[in-house]
Length: 68
Image (cartoon, one colour):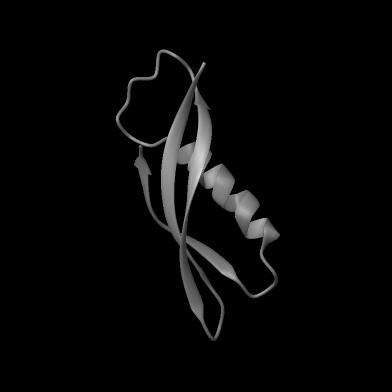
């Protein structure tokens, strides 16, 4: 298995404010995966876990994701 690095840009917002942020994800990729695209399903799983960590009233919005 290979480790794929994905740069995810996102916004955390609530009723009054918003904050731009980014994070680099390390995703395990099977050796036969040669797609230049970031694996959206894995990024969305990460986004759901990250959303669960946020306090009530805050929402996470994924802006972009890039394979690096």
